[in-house]
Image (cartoon, helix red, strand yellow):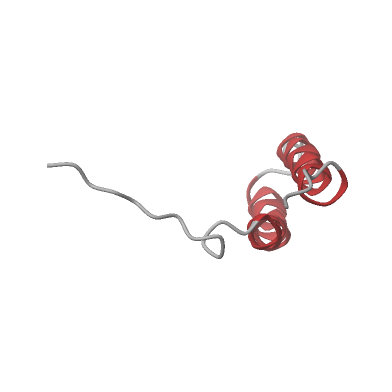
Length: 72
């Protein structure tokens, strides 16, 4: 038996996907720095994960808002 999936245009909203990604970044980054501050502050390891994630958010933004394909 085959199952058909009808993907609605509303279900795949790139702008909403970016907003969720950005919100997760904004909420998780302070938590990561808080964990670093409360455990061991000798090496600033959150800078690596935060900067890498920020690059990911930047490319997500560019893909959604700058280099988007025009759909008819």
